[in-house]
Image (cartoon, rainbow, N blue to C red; front, side):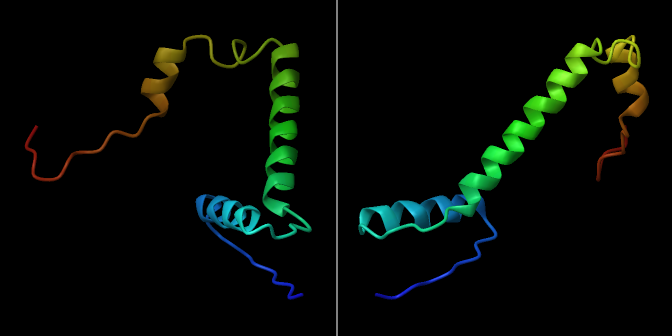
Length: 82
């Protein structure tokens, strides 16, 4: 038996490699990507629930359209005069 440890920077590539490993009946000892995704999802859900419990952003952003116009950084497009 041979053990290989991979560090894959691209999540899409990681999914392809995991599918190939499963297709070849390889034993996947630890799927760090899936564990990290689950942990990140749980954190995000927790933060969103806390935000919702506090009433959302309506106290901070009373007019979302005006806020977006104020925050957004428009720039002139190349080769355009207007």
